[in-house]
Image (cartoon, rainbow, N blue to C red; front, side, top):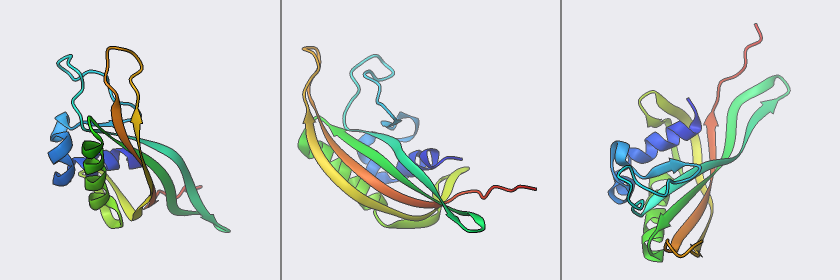
Length: 155
């Protein structure tokens, strides 16, 4: 399983996050980009989360792969207001900053998280791109995630 799948499952399991973005399959947590419309064809409600892997690196030593990976994950919290976007970002920080657990995720979608740390955060207002939509507030967070990965076998 991937870190991104585990992150998605982990966020869906945190009530402080789902209280803001919805529960289970209806949770507004998206990889890479959020859809413009919800499943009913209406404007996607806010707040919501978008995440993406910015960069990943496997650790090595002279004997080969060390079995530890480091990923910088960008997680963006969007809201109709600055207060709404910042409230979601704070819920995310409280749910993830400093977490260390062998069961980061849920069910079969888990990784052994050795450390998850908020690296940086910044807020902005995104102007509408055309006259049919409203602007949106975004808090961009960069997370440093250290986790166990499989070691290649050459047998």
